[in-house]
Length: 142
Image (cartoon, rainbow, N blue to C red; front, top):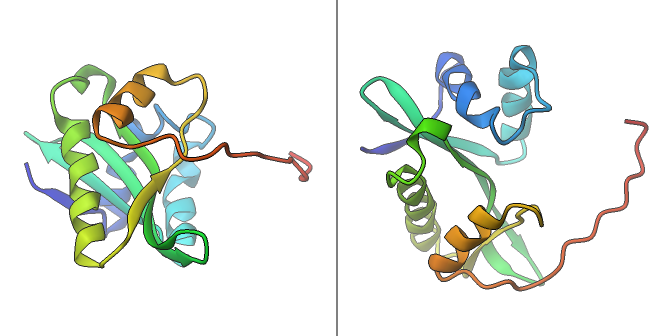
């Protein structure tokens, strides 16, 4: 089950049914354009496909900051609902970690909604630590 980057519009669109489980506010008709827009800022969309079905999707980017040094930030990580607890999410968690080591990153970072206890268990099981609180101040119109 090799993980791969979604490069073509059809590959990006094929990731939508899985990603929509995590990002339900994004309409299918906007998905490719939004991914392409984020790619200009370094976003990469990866997926794991088995038997012609995308089983899990991840979105990530590399960055560097004074606080964190070089890092890989996981923005999205989700498995197909019917494919959970079958190792697909684990594979897509391990793959960016390998990429981060290759790029000599100091760490992997991600935020997880406070309500998502199953995801928290998964991250803690993978030796992640709760390192901070993330605060948000909405300033937009919608």
